[in-house]
Length: 223
View 1 (cartoon, one colour):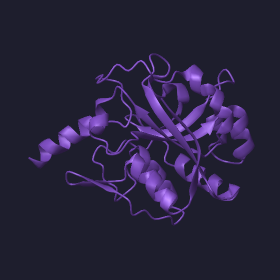
View 2 (cartoon, helix red, strand yellow):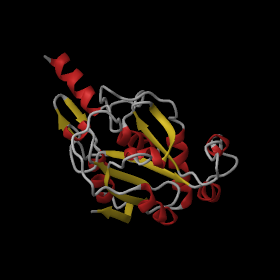
View 3 (cartoon, one colour):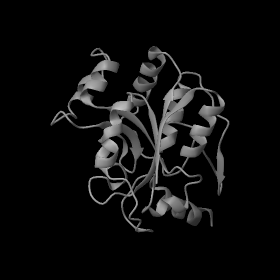
View 4 (cartoon, one colour):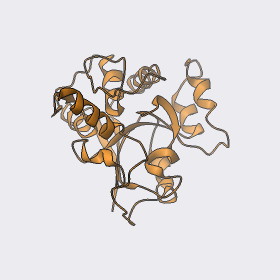
């Protein structure tokens, strides 16, 4: 029975981001063109949670927010925030093919990787984005830089299908943020029980960071 539950849970949670079964057909979702004007308000290192309308994983992920990503931003934003001495600087720069891309870091079915914001919630095609909230650390630049470096150090880490929050050998979306902060001695107490698992969902993550007064809301978009 436990094995069956594990298989079902993995299929549902595969992600935090996976475009397969549609569960709604909302016409009120945000398009990429509608949200790109807000990118100038974001900063490298911001946390963004999104709510989707079409993923069956929504049925399993607790709370309103279904996916967490770390905003890296435009080429100019990254150059302003991340030192050229960073061992990941050149790797990020390679993402800017046309110089107008917006890059994010997240853990999805392909593991921890750099992606384009257009790849979130199917924005490059028919949008699945219902709402989005952006939070910023209320910390000095050195703290944010260290957080970004920690998160980038997990590049290519496999996706955590087992939802095992006790180690960082595999990571799901909000878990990437959690372990990047744990390296800086930030602890978390907010979590959710899901079957035999204890997970820190995207909603749990923000709730805990707000409780610790570590973040402030920058922007929320909702229909």
